[in-house]
View (tube, rainbow, N blue to C red):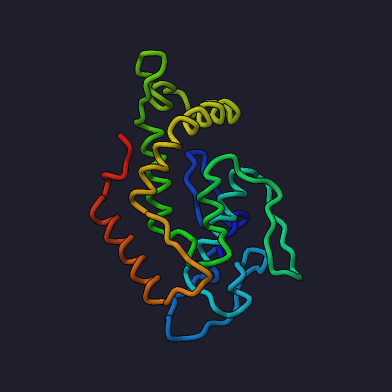
Length: 212
């Protein structure tokens, strides 16, 4: 699909809109496909004609980083390698995993959705004990949040993120245990087995992965 920040837009309510579906395709795993899209956004496997849906995870990671830094990345064409000019101050680990050179190390779309939904849930509902009292964070404590200036919003969100991130990571690691890959010598069936175990774990946990 080739997601790029320049082809997307964000509404006043912070809803992302995909602005270009021009190269979206239905993938047939039994067929070869021609190379499409802007090479600046392509992962390493793209240049070896061995890519799948994990390509979209890579481009999504680049989009997230540009969204949070307002800075595009560089591309070293001779090495077929991207280079971030500025690193996002939030979701750093998620972005890094999306940009992993090995596609098997990248998160699934389901994991990304669960991750972002978890933080959104916490942003609206999370409470934390501070100075011997419960301090409601963001929406309840700052009912005018959406009408604030960007700098004020960022200050509030960064405070929430610093408090919530450790608990969120713990919950996500339980729901999505990391896949260990040693020297790329694991069989394809082993990889599929661990990915299936992840999906089953997500189905069992459901909304229980949310931090209360």
